[in-house]
Length: 341
Image 1 (cartoon, helix red, strand yellow):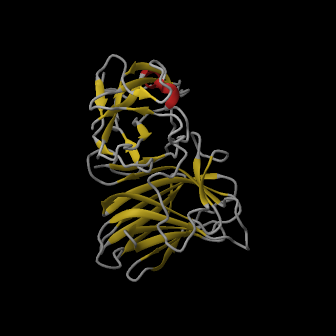
Image 2 (cartoon, one colour):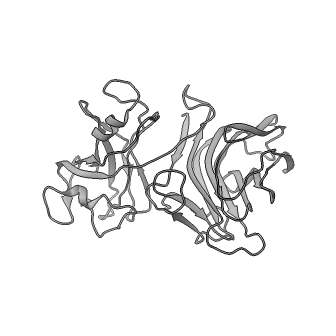
Image 3 (cartoon, rainbow, N blue to C red):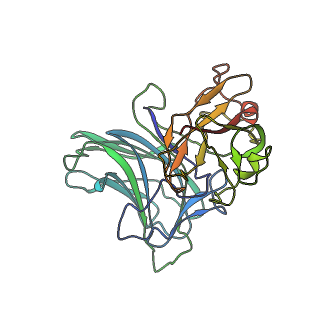
């Protein structure tokens, strides 16, 4: 499988995420557009708030996020199998990272780097769940600490979610204490994306024109459907496009990405959709690189509300020439939804 998750919170919503700790407040977890590592937004954790990131189960993962502290280091990040904690890190009062692991889970080691307020830091972790497992932490690409031992405190042998929780220090209330952005998770399979994620920035580009239109727009116009699907975050049922029969689609051109001097490792499409008929509808997201054919993601069953993350096919290379994507390639891509009723 290799890459399990890539998330930059560019849709500016928390669809697909929730509170993993029942007695903590998810209402103090919000999206911030004022403080972010890249793109347009980040997740902001407030006073006694919680946030969960689910992903496909694996016994061995490489985790990456960028993290920013404002005025308190009181955050824990747990790696779990469903609701069972297998270990965690804690950002200590002095800005160092403590690792808790073992059987039973206990303080294992502490890092040497001292983080400070008001700076973005690249946090990476290697976690192997086994009787003879390993936990390694990197800060800004440099190893901060490592510990080997029994990382399997019970019978669970895989991780399938990360759970964050913050607590105030010296009574500091909301506004946010901690920001998280540009998250990625790899496993060790597939021959690519099977090791450290490294630095990464995730940006989104929005529809800017309509190249091909079959879907019905909520405004009744036959040529401007891109204007109905280009708002971030989604405006729910205020503006939308809708299909009636299977295999109708739209294709939209994109705003210029504005990138220069970068390596583009992957592209994908993302949308919010719902089944207004309640009939088990499906949708697929498609991309079309300049000079190439349409590439369709898998059919995704949709719900009767905008509460499901819809993802298209992740493409590591431009399918036209099998070379790395360039900013010019991205500017020329067309994207859109296809009904799969």
